Figure 1 (cartoon, helix red, strand yellow):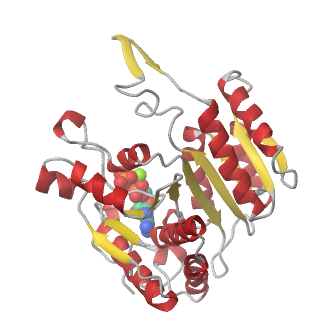
Figure 2 (cartoon, rainbow, N blue to C red):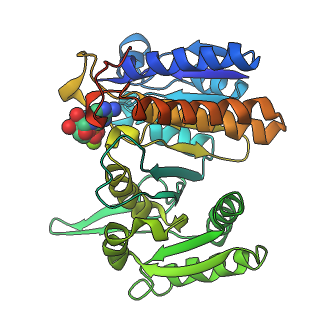
Length: 341
Ligand code: ATP
Ligand code: MG
């Protein structure tokens, strides 16, 4: 399996360094023959090649089996015509990584304020309320007068179907429950369609029970009793917001693993950002990216039908749990070690 590694900004170099170490160890323990190739993206690529991502990089990524993307500081990327493209958005779109899988669970050895839980947010990643993902070119946000701005949100049958299928397939491997999160009480047409399609797809999975919760009420339910949830399926922006909440409820944003998966490619990416406030101090928690990389191995194992990758992915997640329980983790999760250790 060939994996392209793009370190990113802020704590990116530290947490991708740690993740590469874990992947190399897994490769030798499980005979995976991983080839890890470091390339530049984001600010590093802008300095070297005049653009945050290049066609040559996209070709390399397309020839590989997966991608580990470190966090990118994107606030100063303003003009795409000057090569300032958000790499995360770029790969999600170019590789059609439609399913953003964001697990959140509690761990032994850490205070679980809300009791133990183990859930996964399955977020649609390619359309919805994001200005860059709605239409083929240009933006779906517009200033129609100096005082009036409009943002459009596109929802399609095809994208609803494929994200619903991802959620139900995942539920079959877990506790067989799917919660549809929506705002169909006000977004009657688009979210109404989303719900209807989720139920249609759900008919193919009769063992999976389904419920529906309106997104605002969901915020209360997930804080009140996160243990009632198994797989949560939702549209792009709701999933973006909800998954930050669930990662933090699990103990730390630094535990938020995230896989962006399509039918041919997948990209491991921490749920958090570049955390410039703690960069270069060897205190960042590498587990969000380590757990994301473990999911990438599992995804690949499933795709090519090779159980060694599935076992390696499970062993890494289990290793993270054991390290947290033993206090062999960073201080944000009550540990005493630095990133490298
Ligand atoms: P960006 O603009 O790249 O998103 P940010 O300043 O918003 O950067 P985040 O990375 O989103 O920062 O982090 C938000 C908070 O969570 C920060 O205080 C940061 O230190 C903390 N944090 C984020 N990731 C980690 C991590 N891996 N380990 C420990 N703390 C983290
Ligand atoms: Mg941030």
